[in-house]
Length: 73
Image (spheres, one colour):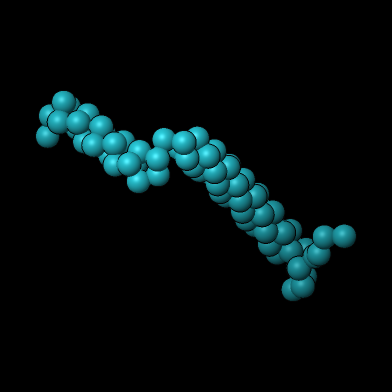
């Protein structure tokens, strides 16, 4: 597949999107997609932070010899 052919596919997809959603609705669609991506990235970051906190709790529990995990105040 050549690069020129790949570019033409994107134009066809863009035309189909404009026909389906209409030009006036595209800015609102793009805005909602951006908000969704921001929320998704924030949730992934929060989940990674929580996973890091959980592994730290498990390590501290193993070091202290306690079977019950500590809870946050």
